Amino acid sequence: MIVVTTDAPPGREAGESLGVVAGEAILGVNIFRDLFAGLRDIIGGRSGGYQKALREARDHAMQDMEAEAAALGADAIVGVDIDYEAIDTQKGAMLMVSCNGTAVKLR
Image (cartoon, one colour):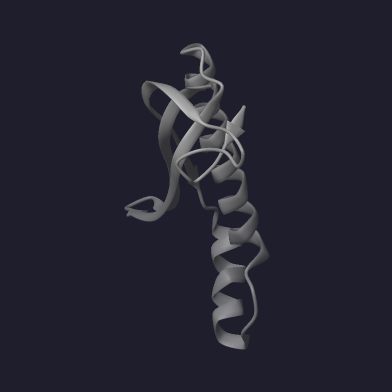
């Protein structure tokens, strides 16, 4: 499956639009990751635990979006937008990633 943020893959032309497809992933963030992220805030640096969690969430959301497009018979997904959101609940923090795009047949 070709997945691009542009209106068509390079050197190709989008034909029939099959509709909007989406994928979402919500991951809980555990207390240890929160603890180490808090330490990183104090001493500086990157939070590897959060980066890994965001990457995993994005991969799951993309896979779900691609599966939805494949079920429609699409060759590609164009105009992809990826959004990240932190959700604070009474039980802790959660990370949400949503991917949206248009499933198309290529000419």
